[in-house]
Image 1: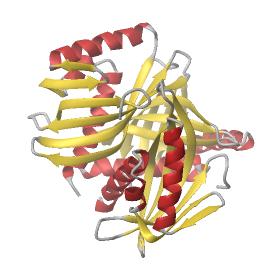
Image 2: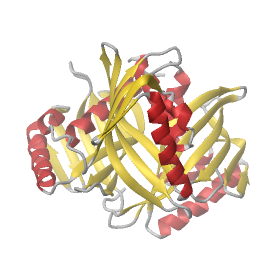
Image 3: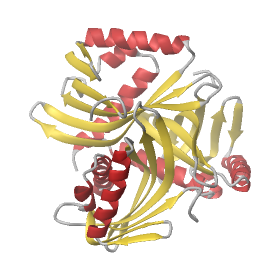
Length: 135
Length: 135
Length: 135
């Protein structure tokens, strides 16, 4: 058993709840200052730019009345010289007003997590969208 | 690391399996005798009334030949003077005869868990249905 | 708390990632040599035959350009004279080229896990497909 596994589970639960509740600045604070977020061909560098991108996306969904829920599952954690690598499935649900649930996107999330005074942070995240991005 | 996190994970796994298998009395036994279950504007008070409501709902789905599966995810647990607060996502799947899967409802589940001789029980549960209830 | 719960979580995360990435031989290696895989009326006996069946299925999905993601949830683990029994929900997502996500199948996965030099292996798996197989 390894304390890091539970820590990673708790980290993702907190991180996804922050994102989905629109707390985009706190969410971006779970990345390192020099954190990198890659999805498809898009690369966002630095917690500031990551926060801004998240704010824009959150505002669009809020304006459309859509709730998003990010689920992390099948989490695999391994030691890494800088911290931990974590590979998980991430499923994005979208819920419109009225309550209909649409499973919008299935992805693989490959993170490098590094320690900080406040716990784990993401130094590098690469999202691969199933059916869209090369595996 | 904190033993309570794993205990909470196991509690929810057991509780949801009981509900989905139609063991509504055992499921209601995972609430305290004075437990409260809130969803939207509906408030059910006491394990007896919670059991009765669950029995009725289970009977309706059984009559319609629909299997339900409640998934809990993104579980966040915090200490509370009376026990633990647990905030999680809950996704309800409905499966009709033939096997088609419908993600019926996405919710946030906010629980107050208190200890008992048989482990954790729900003293208060508030379900917020995405797209339906105020957040 | 029980080390086996986390071990089981990690086991399933690894096992499902192997299957979904097409590493069918490694996946079959997570069964014992005499492992049994039952789903509906079909019974496959032995890691060799389990690997072959998985290879065929994986090839069909690859040819159709469909990514599969197996999610395990609501995991309940109990001691057993030979190791552990694990009962979980398993949800199968299919993602076609373009990214549309289809929740294809909801199942209950009942495993007997036994220890090995490489960690847990499945000695017996019975999959019950919701809406299709008797519960």
